[in-house]
Length: 358
Image 1 (spheres, rainbow, N blue to C red):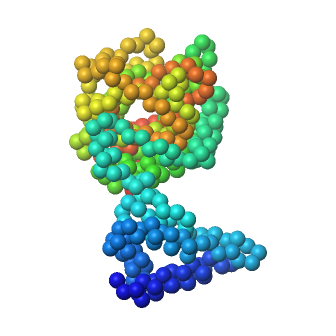
Image 2: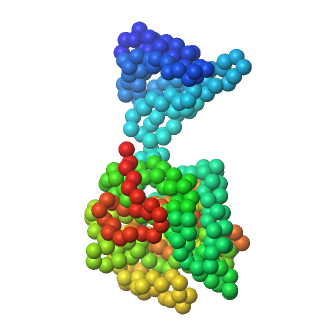
Image 3: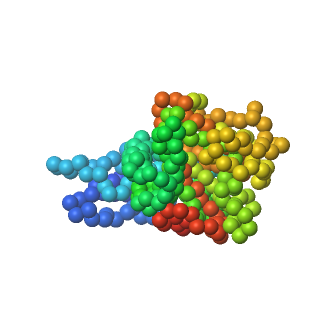
């Protein structure tokens, strides 16, 4: 690589930085010449250990420019792709932004072999707070109704314990809370699901709110989600040969051993569909049938923090039991199917929407 070409590239980038702060009219300024940028980007390819040095140079050259009387941040930040898994973003740090969204081959293998994967702190505290606010609104709607049914675009499933109303779940919660639909379309969820389903088009079947209030008696016994997707002939087709469904679960409150945490059976994802019985969650005396592959001792208890997100498949055996703690254990569930897999109508206004992952 010619030193003069390298210096020209750096100089051009520095010059761009000096004039790129958004002006009063937010005008677009000329980007550096493509060849000059490519010169910079080829350095890590030729000299693997220079990646950090390049990032440091970009950090030096691309600082926000303060104008007299103002402190403008440009409407967009520098976004240079080094490779498919590493990006330089936000003018301040090297981050693996694509790998935060795009699953590695190892993660995909783990998903299908073990049954689930966890993305720690996938959603930040502000996002979790906004989702909780939506749950507060849903809880208020539930307080004002007397029975299970559709309200404001969402389907509320209610019960009772000790003469107290119980919210078992809210189906298509995004029907009444648009922000939840925004979360359901977020690429942090849809891109991994697209990879796992092998399709750039997803059908979102679930936008579901689970509250698990302290001692409310809500349980979800051992089951596989395929039991809820495939209700018999003509209701479901396994398009991708691996179940054609991925469920995601965003943790909103700390998930502890006594708060009715999620339980998984590792490796159950490879069983295919097995018989857990009729999964009558509403019957407190119901005991699910346990297939021969199932052993209670194999269960893994999931401990998680707000913002953590789980991805699991339709054959993964899982359960959660009563919350005996003194705090809520809320989760937001979004579920996605391969296009053409589902042949049922789900409750809620706008349910079963199509999402294109570009």
